[in-house]
Image (spheres, rainbow, N blue to C red):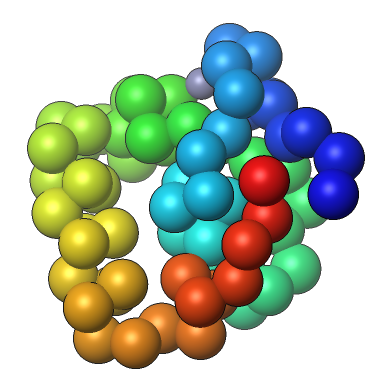
Length: 69
Ligand SMILES: [Zn+2]
């Protein structure tokens, strides 16, 4: 799997961040954003998204079961 970078800042994407992008876009994310840039996009604190990611992972969201990086 090729290394994915954030479309905005170029930071390497973590597995959870990729899974979250796929979750938000129904598995067809055209571009990937790291949590920091996504939070800036949404106008919410990054902690809010980290918490959401934790909840999704614990709820068994299938995107989080995959290994992307
Ligand atoms: Zn970024």
